[in-house]
Amino acid sequence: MPLFHFVIAQRSFKMFSQCIEALPVSRRPAVLGVFLNMLQLGHPASIKVLQQACDELPREWLFDTAIPRSTAFLDASGLKGVRIGVQARTGNNPIVDKVLEQAISVLKAQGAEVVDPAPIETAGQLGMNERDVLQYEFKADLNAYLATMPAAVKPRTLADIIAFNAANETQEMPYFGQETFIASQARGPLTDQAYLDARAKCIELTRTKGIDATMDKNKLDAMLGPSGGIASLVDLAGGGGGGGGPGSSQFPAVSGYPHITVPAGFHFDLPLGVSFYGRAWSEPVLLRLAYAFEQATKARRAPGFTPTLALS
Image (cartoon, rainbow, N blue to C red; front, side, top):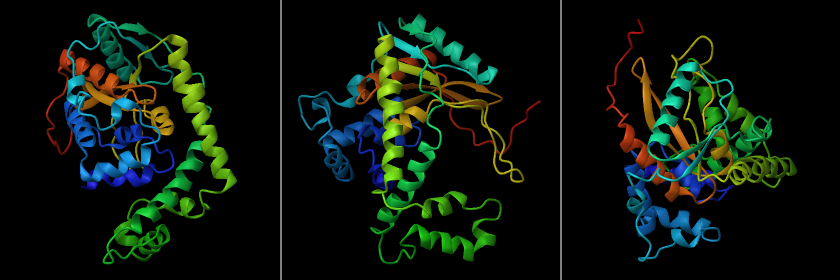
């Protein structure tokens, strides 16, 4: 099942909660609950995930028929009595802020206590550590993944892919280059002290002094923030596009902690979401909160696959 290919890329942090973070955005929290059921029921592709993380799994995640399945966490009244902190919103687009404010009003109406703001004090301190870890792990894990492919798959390493792209530049890279590939290829093994230091700093800033410290200080059940900015047009001349302000994915992604995004509104038919995230092993809590928010708002619309948007 291709969905599980991401497991290899999570080797370094080896946290089961990253399986949730690495999933494609779920259509609904209920879909994510069904996926977690697969993990608990021992889906063949999921067994490796649990074996990798077995030394860190809390009791409630182990195979145990006495443990309620993940869909049991889907409680429409799940926001009542919880304490949710709002991450700092410095630099957000005002349109994104408006959607976030509407989300906060829903939380309060559903009985949640909102701490606003509940800033993560280490935000902005990761520097190049995040980039360095990404490049080291991208090379190591992609090479490990390619080594498992059938013999018919010719690229066996990142270096092979770089060479193939260079040899077929017109077809493979008509607009953008492969700078990240090349930078990752230049990195050494995961035993390099530079990697070990950068990874340790990432864990310290995003876990111990980051999400954990913020939630402990404010006695929170979860954190809330915008999932991302407004989707922008791809700029082929300028190297991509930019969105309308920061999102919530950085600290959960770098820490390996769970993060779930839920539809919250639209701007010119472009979807905007809010994110619930928290400390390690808080997937049941986040599923409950996200599901309750979803049921209270019903903000999701079926995709229209519109070829272009009328912006006036």
